[in-house]
Image 1 (cartoon, rainbow, N blue to C red):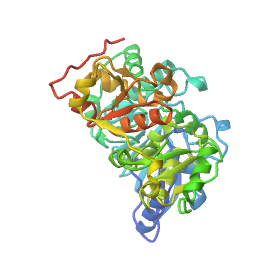
Image 2: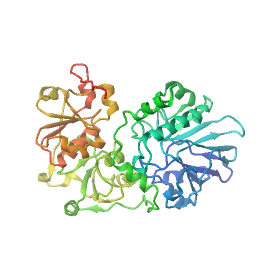
Image 3: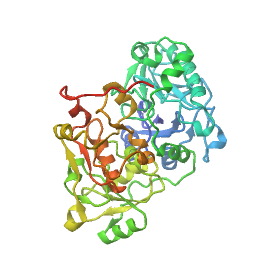
Length: 454
């Protein structure tokens, strides 16, 4: 979570931006500040992020605001100037104050920010970053390559939640950095806020338990970390170029697209899965803008890959900026004419089958479940399906037979369209995805296999 600090200007009241995170395309933050007559005074980073590129450098360049992390950060690990914040340090925004709490666990330098809206009063709320989510806590297993074991960080997280956050009053509002869908936890709620009391009662990770039990509870069942996480974590430490979100995306002819693909670029079709299935350029991988676009691209493409966008008219800048949020800056351009203008012989259709049809074919096809382990454990799976989470698909292709007819499914159809198009682009023959996902299969009329716990 990056929290732009705001101070008054022309008589307006102090305000701190609640919750959320600071993305690289920062125009919305600048507009918010200007519309309220405020200035951005400081950028507070709750930790070095792995799941997206923060807009800290963009905000600092645009406003002159200093960048701050908790004092536990290794100063040599970042290439840009920072103003570290001590544990319990208080930042004043007039009547509102922000109190820094060091809460290591998700990362060693993680902090939470307690907001007081009256001098000396009880906490109004707490911005918990990736330390505490609604229904979960931040996963502690992302820094193995940096010398920190999941157990070490989980033990620190146990102490941070019990000794710091759970000592706050039960009516303290909780605003985390992420909601459902983030890979930074395994049980995140769709709710975007809560209270300490509600989390004390309903969050499995805050239930009464000893430290060893907690370590086991928060480390088991985590999804495979997307491929781009390590890249983004390093990139957030670098003095990288800032994003110009207003720059036009180059428009490419079909010949220019072909030349880029010959040189190694990948085609990313950003349309809805059904539109993609109706007709797309051969070799395209479908990741629709309607979902978690950037994160999903980062699960199946490496950051050093050149990308050509193919999609609806007027969407190229949005797609480029959303990819930039995870550090994927190698967008060469977009197909100017769109896929519909390509010669018919250049287009392909994608098979999408109904659950009733899969019932007839299930013993004749290779079935692949690309949901996360927690989803499979909770709801079961199609019998004899290969469970390969989407973030692990590229590294586990050898487990599948490219010559066998294949059906891919997820929860609802978004991830399965990505996976199916990826398999086709990697040379697999007949690949369909299941319309309606596992929900269409598990309607009570078909068998469901329950995986045996490890």
